[in-house]
Amino acid sequence: MLKFLILLFMVMLVGSLVSGAYFLMVDQGDKTSRRTLNSLGVRLGLALGLMSLIIFGIATGQLGHRNPWDNGPSGAVSQESAEQQ
Image 1 (cartoon, rainbow, N blue to C red):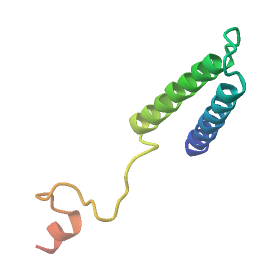
Image 2: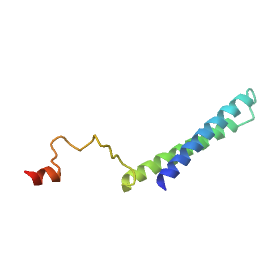
Image 3: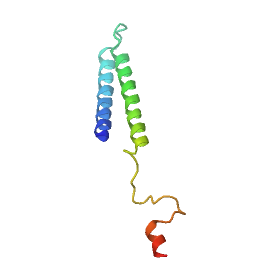
C-alpha cells in the first residue's frame, strides 16, 4: 500500500510539473495570472508529502534494502557459518 502511495505521489508530481510548464508557456507576459506560482506550490507540497511517506516507510521498516550483494558489515558472521564451525 505504501509503495502504491509513493508511486501515486510521483505521478502527481510529474503532472504538476507538466501543468506548470504549460501555464508558463500560455501565460507569458500576463502579470495577473498566478497559475504557474500555484502549480509550484502544489509541487512543493507533493514533494514534502512524498519525502514524509518515504521517511515514514523507512522508520516503520516497510521500506528498506534487500540487496543480495549486501550481507552487512564485512566482519559479520552469519548464523549458518557459526553453526558449521
